[in-house]
Amino acid sequence: MVPRQPGERRVLQVTAGTRSLAVLGSPIAHSKSPRLHAAAYRVLGLPWTYSAVEVVEGSLGAFINTCDSTWRGLSLTMPLKREVLPMLASRSALVETVGAANTVLFDDDMAMHGFNTDVAGIVDALADHGVTGLESVQILGGGATAASVLAAVSLLGGTRAVVSARDPERASGLEPLAGRLGIELATRRLGVGDRSLIVPSAVISTLPGGVDHGTAFPEAVREQAVLLDVAYEPWPSALAAAWSDVGGTVVSGLEMLLHQAIGQVRIFVTGEEGGALPDEDRVVAAMRESVGL
Picture 1 (tube, rainbow, N blue to C red):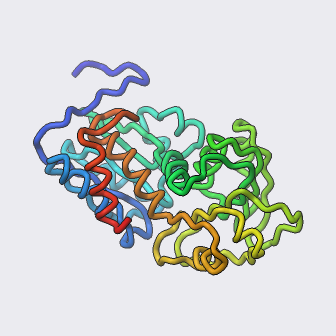
Picture 2: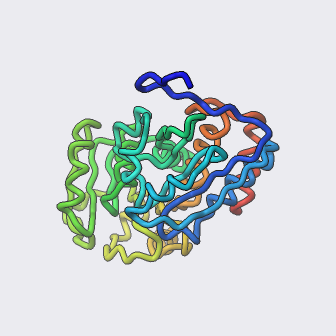
């Protein structure tokens, strides 16, 4: 075996053989990632299997130890996007920036390489609704996905963000990231109203599905600010219903899930970040259809 240099990624070559992939997290039974990925690999003619596996916080290492050379990659959701970081042989620049990886690629030595497709998923989902620029946002939740939201906001030109979290002290860990991104950040407890009368460009919820956000949004906010609710089960969420009641713009978390999954499929199939898949338009159309988009 040729020794690998620091930072070098040796990519597993795609063959006609079966490869295993999975989305890991907790809870995970509701995940529609298996539908999205199965649709993509079917169009691409790859006999790959992609499953959903319940993995609770603290158990990621034990699961990875069960993976053999048939494994191609992993999708990670709550609460594993930060837990995986010390296990990675390399991290993409975006993973380094936001401190969270939602995508793991195994190389031919079973070393793990981390990527973040959540940021592009957010940007592309908003773009589908004509949102290509933001000034300010209110983010519900202060975890790993909130960090990806901040990076997406920066890419869209945003300069101000308010993070509403159940534990504002824990969410304060986002402040160094916001500083590096040039975003003015304020944190407050979830459910505490905004008395500034400033209507944000967007409200983005990173809270799990069914969680009570405890925040009453004025009609003006619901009418003028686009809502992206990362959760998609159950749907419509209470937030989505409140926005729809006044004719506001709602972006489903399922749309974000689709776009981040497209990025993951590109990585798993090509071994690299970015670029296009063979017959990508047909792949994406099949993925959309698989989840009713």
